[in-house]
Image (cartoon, rainbow, N blue to C red):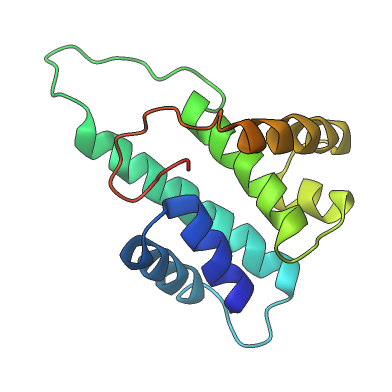
Length: 136
C-alpha cells in the first residue's frame, strides 16, 4: 500500500488526488492479487483518470474529431514517468515493468534511461493543466 500511495503521490502531485487514485486502484483488486497485477491496475486507473481529466478540460466543439490511434503524448509521458518510479520506488526489474506497462523490454530500457535524465533535469514540466496530474 505504501508503494502504491508513493507512486500515486509522485504521479499526481497532491495528497487528495493520490488518495483518490489509490482508492480507485484498491476498489479493483482483492487481498490475494499479486503485486505486479496491482501495479498494472494502478496504471489503468491512472490512465483512466488522465482521460477523464482531458475530456473535462476539452472545449466543446460542434465537429467530431477522430482521436489518433495509439497513446497520447500525455499518456506516453505518464508511462515514462511511471516506468522510472516503478523502478525506483518498489525496485521492480525491467521485465516486470515491461509487463505492467505493456511495452517491449527495449522500450522500457530506453524510457528508463531517458526518463531518469528528463526527471533529473526537470524536463517533465509540460504545463499539464489537469488538477490531479502534475509532472513535477
